[in-house]
Length: 225
Ligand SMILES: Nc1ncnc2c1ncn2[C@@H]1O[C@H](COP(=O)(O)OP(=O)(O)OP(=O)(O)O)[C@@H](O)[C@H]1O
Image (cartoon, rainbow, N blue to C red):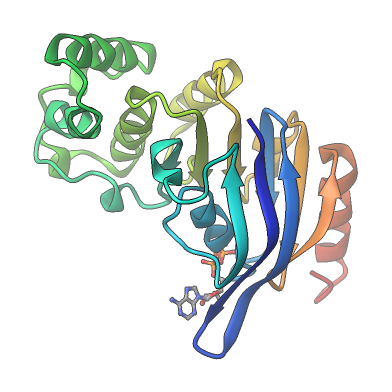
């Protein structure tokens, strides 16, 4: 399924945050890089309708207005994603909205927790979890809903090495297409395509072996990126 951006701009007040973005995204693994404030999160939020274009259209297959049903979103800050006091309840929440039978919901939750080595957190209170544990529970919360595409906003910022490797393993085997915003350029090295956003525009678009070194070179040249 293709995610299509057609002349998409996002304006807040008088400020244009994203300008005239036109893209056809068909790859399995797409990385998004760029400086703080360049527009990466805003770009990502368009994928599942958390942000609406001021002008232009975002289309996933034939859908333009119910993107949330198709595209899962993993937030940069897990506190924005985890809503229930218990881990198990929180994971069940996303499935209730999809009217999944209770037994199937429980099976899915067990499976995802086991895949992420998180079964020990099932009965824990979410507000007592560490930052990295919350980030992993947020990941589980997205995976249980089995969306057709998943977008990740800086998914590894709070993770220790073990959980970062766990995340990378999950990403490598995920059947769905994934879009990952990250400042961790090593995470994106094996991806199919990298978009470099600068000043709300697509500054570069291509293979990681081309786009990432060019971005690094720009930043090494002080003030260049
Ligand atoms: N609601 C808003 N009103 C005004 N400005 C906004 C709003 N939301 C975002 N911005 C501005 O838009 C710009 C892009 O923000 P965005 O969060 O998309 O950047 P980013 O590339 O994800 O940054 P970071 O790497 O720091 O997470 C920033 O300058 C931000 O201050």
